[in-house]
Image (cartoon, rainbow, N blue to C red):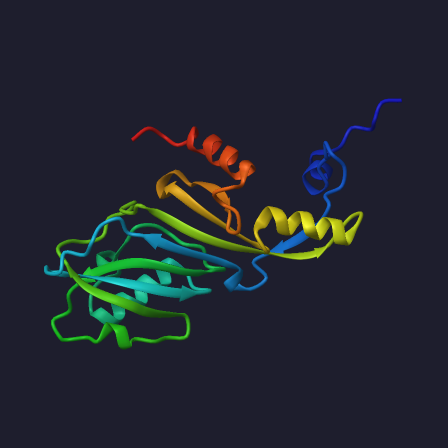
Length: 207
């Protein structure tokens, strides 16, 4: 007898599995600290100029909202604030912003708000354009809930694959949106990760 055909909704909510039930299940982003991302600028601040580069850590905050707050504090228009790209709200993100140097002196590094803080401030020559990054570094925590078959076996498999529940990824090019998964415990030795990185590199657009 032929298997009943799944509706599109059923297939999306409970897709068929080639190898049976997963050995373990987990939750992503239970807390903002479960998803960490840090921009790698790829160049050094100029050290002089009409703009200021700010390295900001934000938690559970929208990139554009932080930009508006910085514009308000710096006395400029929101459109004059530059950032290389949008970062997830439900996360802890370290990213760079630029804005015109204010007329009055501002101690940016003393700025502490509930949702963000300025870690570094450097004079720079121009506005930070979109995509002006060497890449992004991620650290993702998967909280193991339980297993479908054998909890002890399933948990061991998950921990082995994810490196003690933390999986770090690095994107070779942030604009591409492609990230290669790297086990934080055994990145150099992990055959699966090397194979995955090679496959994802092939998807990146040519420079």
